[in-house]
Image (cartoon, rainbow, N blue to C red):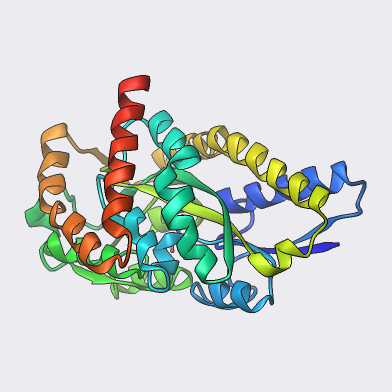
Length: 315
Ligand code: 6CS
């Protein structure tokens, strides 16, 4: 059995380390009876093509982020509501690993599109980069901010007064360099590996969001596998998922150490400053309920309750 497994990032990025860890574990456990081919971003097309390739069975497995799939499964835009998650990453890890909002209602929406979501997981806090400091909503006015192209991400930047851009990830560096866009949001490891820090003067430690993603397979293909292979794959994904939490943390730390050596100025937003942005993005919650389709309200309420419960347990 050969698994064609695509992801959205470059070699050595968090998704790439995740998929290669999965590959190594599966190939070792099966003595090579099951093999995995890894496809990095761009090798099979643009950011939004992967989902179609999964649906048609051109690939079997993928790491597919809601920031791209929100246009196809509007419910998954729950992941685009800023300041939804906790400042405590252990809380976020637990919620992404367990919440019924994700593995019940939201998973059904993936199934309806022929996809089986295995695990939701995270790739770190989101930071802004720009050529000017962004410390208050006023600073966002008219800025061409790049975010992943899903409607609700665009809407949240509109709420902040910015001029949102859904630029393809492969174009971000050049667009920043030429002024086609003024700023962007991403986790530290990606800001470092994509060299955005070279063409931006300021890095805002805003933690306005977390980057979430999903490990998914083509459902029909998966159901053709023998039951024991299905179990082995499912167990391995859970193991790699648990492993990935520390891995991504280490990647952020390494990235920060390198970014600190560069000329970029790092600005840490105060609680008050973050709160001002938080307030502005509150209407995005309502926008999600309106545009998130059937079950959106339930997903939002369930995940909020789960975040609160996990905070009480872990904080
Ligand atoms: O901003 C983006 O489009 C990209 N960011 C990350 C962290 N992963 C993949 C995605 O293409």
